[in-house]
Amino acid sequence: MENFIKNISYEIKKDTNEEYHSKKEYIGASGLKLIKKSPLHFMEEEQKETEALSFGTAYHTFILEPEIFEKENYIFNDTEICNQLIGEGAKSPRATKIYKEWADEQYRLANGKNMIDQATYNLLQTMSKRLKSHRYVNSLLSGGEAEMSVYCDIEIFTGQKIKVKIRPDYKKDHKRIISDLKTTTDSSTDGFPRLAADRDYHIQAALYSDIMDAIEGKGLGWNFFFIAQEKTKPFAFNIFESSPQFISQGRYEYEQLLMLYAWCLEQNYWPGYQCFTQNKFGVNVLNLPSYMVKEINWYQHKF
Image (tube, rainbow, N blue to C red; front, side, top):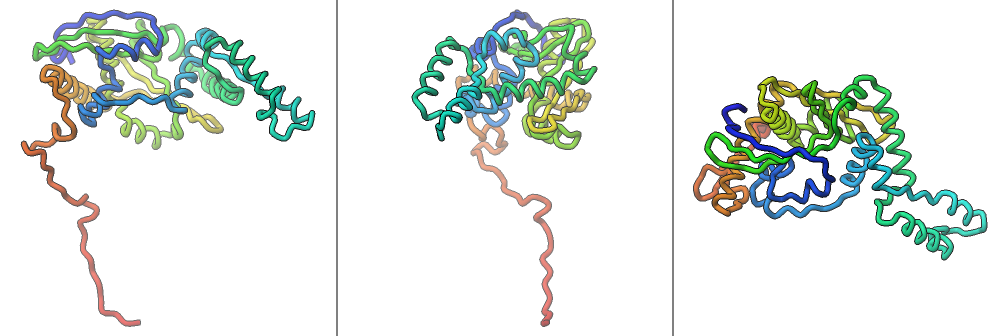
């Protein structure tokens, strides 16, 4: 890492998640993961707001920044009005004129805030209560700073200059610890490592740790923790500390991908899969996986 990053200048600021993602001149861990697929995928990415992404954002804010959650979100609770209308004989209460007028008034009161339905709000409360029942989780998520954006101009050993951004979920400077919250379907000791590998979490862990270490300038290293919680009952969670092997592989990959990104910028050329093909014509050799290479034995038995 010290040989790769030659110089670094930076700005740490408290901005919104939207502002962070709007700074396209900087590349972050998610961008590097796309470049790992191909520079073309990075260049032509279409960001879509999915239900899972919206819930993940709400979860992070609810856990890490509850005061901001209250400012940015409005709880849409239609239980009482629905029960009232059902009591008055309505078979489809949400289709009635009274309900629609009530809903319009709720949107007016929300005044542009994100609408969170009551079921989602109840889920967030339950998950938060389960998570914060653990003493070490509380230790990891207290005494530091949440959702701080770090914008860096780095010069790497080749002399190339690259704008890089990171946004740690929670960092404790005095302990040199970064903690990252993940919602998942499987936070078990077998399941989450597979998910982490599939989603290239090692790139994020190494990039964030190394950037913070370079900013500090003491070469003492930072530790990166994942707190992974399941979104279904019993809302179990696990804590994972990134190992030296996990960080080393992530470091190797982000260094290669940053150099590829710098080359694409210089050339104004964003190739697809062909940039990973050694053959200059972009032709790959197609082999069978090893488990498919086997004998076929058959016998002239008659039963």
